[in-house]
Image 1 (tube, rainbow, N blue to C red):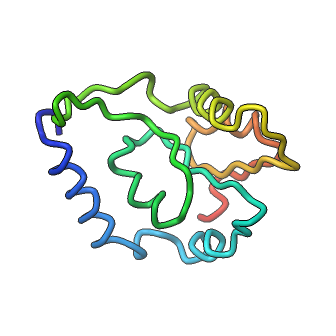
Image 2: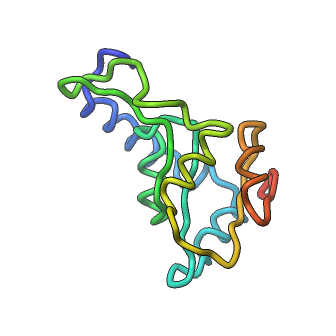
Image 3: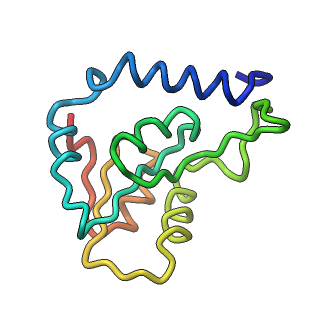
Length: 132
């Protein structure tokens, strides 16, 4: 994707989303997401995937996105990241930065890769491959 414009990449990401949503999601995951109490819950997608690919999903699900950031210069993707890859310990760093001093009754994490282990340890409750 390096060398492509932000517009081209965002268009491809949106097209992928439009062509594949909701079929690429497990029905039980969609049911869970659609039944989140938005008045009493903050929800995040925390992903090592590039922000440009995951943003359409975060927008659809009304969730904040914490992910690896694509670097653009003059609206052209350099093929590099801004900062670190949002994986392993970096997931926890991004969550802590985002929530700051907020206090929560419970932090629940869902994930399906080894890159989620640090996030699981940080959370009060964690679920590995919960929706599989």
